[in-house]
Length: 281
Image 1 (spheres, rainbow, N blue to C red):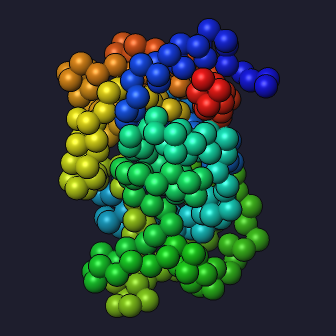
Image 2 (cartoon, helix red, strand yellow):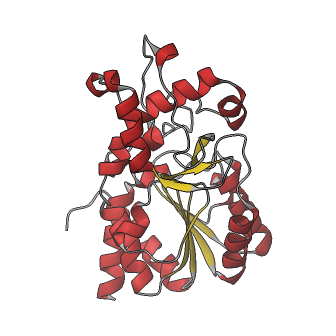
């Protein structure tokens, strides 16, 4: 099998997983880029675009919500049509072989579950759902997409470069006329069921992930620069607990000084080779 992971790196990764059988796996945007979903940052951990909308911006003005939902109308189909890639499938195989104790993801695309992983904690929620902030009703994002298209048919012909997590590089000339979707149940304010920048990760998710880290032997980071605190904090906690940390990531991570092992290779190549190697051994 031809891969882009060096033999020595694969051996070191294999030995790490064999030495620490209960892995706490933390994944980021880099694991989904092979599924056609763009990441947020480059190999230096710098933004590829302007930072995403904050919760304060979204709640603070109708213009911000018009801009968010217009971009989402164009960009969301990229996530909706995405399929799990080799990295997602390999992690599902590693879980089935009892090498992965818990999988915590910063991603909101749901691709881990679709690949077959069962014990997944979605730190930042799911882009596939929308929540009404007034009545609390949850709606499928697909149903809201139809409302968006019906109310804003001019966007059907708009082409824009996709961005991370269902966003798009769209600066529409007629944004002021865009109709923001309202809750079909009560007419209230809709928000995607994801954690925006400036918003806290729900306490229950943090507690579940913390308990999983307590029970794990080591941490394996996959496809994350760890520039967001909600991810890097687990590495800081792991270090305090004396648990080793390995990472598969192209480019630097915020936790590089804490790593016992760093594998700079594409996530799919590295994980597929690891799964095959473990199965053979």
